[in-house]
Length: 107
Image (spheres, rainbow, N blue to C red):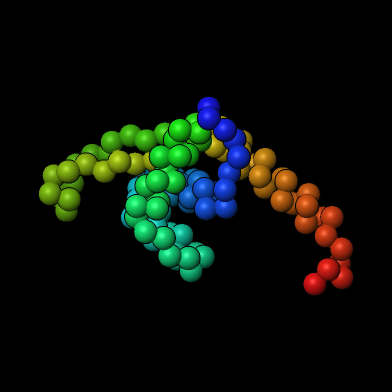
């Protein structure tokens, strides 16, 4: 595993892969992120992030079945593995801990 640090966008993509639960591919991830956050990202940005997450050992890719709507071509699908899940849980716990330290009058 290359490293365990997650950037903000990597965290969004990894969360989205988990949400899509077996139906995660470039376009579906892009649409889901925009739908829930209003944030636009190009497909190439999504793919670059997926490749980084795969190198870090947080997601696994596999080839889905071919479809007529894609001219008989198959999709590259992604799923989160246990290392990805553990990393998201660690990030969530760190954020929650930091939020509890925030003074009530900080805003």
